Amino acid sequence: MNNAIFGQFKKPQVGTLAGKDFFLTLTQITNFFTFVISMVGTVDGAAKIAHDVLFEFEAEPAKKERMKEEWEKRKSAAQGLSENRQFLLEVVLVRQVENFLNYLSSLLNEIFIQRPETLKSSEKIELSAVLNHNSIEDFVKTCAEKKVEALSYASFKELRNYFEERFSLTLVTEQEFPILNEAIEIRNISVHERCIINNRFISKTGCDPALKGKKKVLGIEYLEKIIDLITSLVIEIDKEALSELKLNGIELE
Image 1 (tube, rainbow, N blue to C red):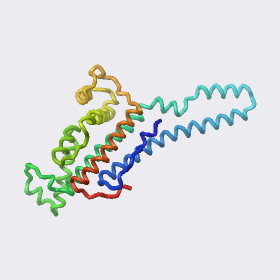
Image 2: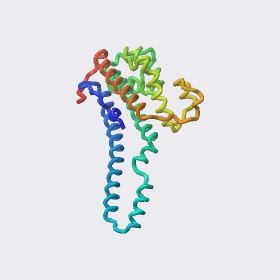
Image 3: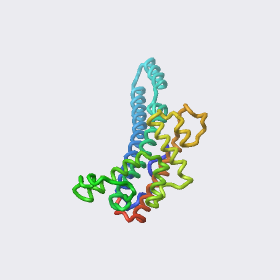
Image 4: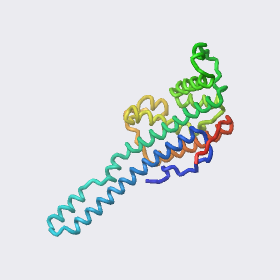
C-alpha cells in the first residue's frame, strides 16, 4: 500500500495543546495501520520459510505432493487482509475523522479558557450558578465546557460557521467543504449503519439517491486524500489560532 497514508507531512514546531493531541493521535493511527500491514507481511514470510524448509527435508514423494497441494489451497494473511480491506479502511477513516472533530472541540475549549471574553453572549445565567464556583476561573471553565458540549452536537456546517463568525477562523474553504463533509458523513454511516448509504447521507452529501441501501466502498487513494486534507487543515487552523487569537503556543516536536 502507498506510504502516503502514513502522514508524510512537516509537523509545525509550535502549536496549541489541541494540535499536540491531534498529532499524537495521528501518530497512533499511523502506527496501528503500519503494524497491521507489517504483521501481514511477517506472517506470510514466516509461513513461506517454514513451508519451504519442511518441503525440502520431506523425503516421501506422496507427502511432498500433499504438502504442495495444501500450500496452494492455503489462504494467506495478505488474502485475509484484502478480503477485509473495507473494514480496515473504515476503522482508519473513522478514527481520523474523530481525531479532527476532537481537535476542534479541544481548540474551542482552549480558546474559551485563554480568551474568556469570547464566551460573551446574550444568554442569561442564574446568580446561583455563578456563586457555586470558588473562583471566576472555575466559572469560566464550566461555561467553556458547556459551550463546547453544546457545539459538539452541531453539524459540521454549523461548526464551521461558528468558528468563522465568532473567531474569524477558517476551518475549510468552500472547495474543500464538500470533501470533508462527505468524510464526516461516511464516518457516521460506518458507525451507525455498517457503511450503508441512507437518506441522511444522501441529503447531507448530495449523492445519487439510487445508491440508497448500498455500501459506501472505500479505497486507499480516498483515505490518503482525506488524511492529507485533515492534517493540512489542522496545521493551518492551529497556525491561524495562534496568530489571530494570541493563544499560548507549546512545542510540538
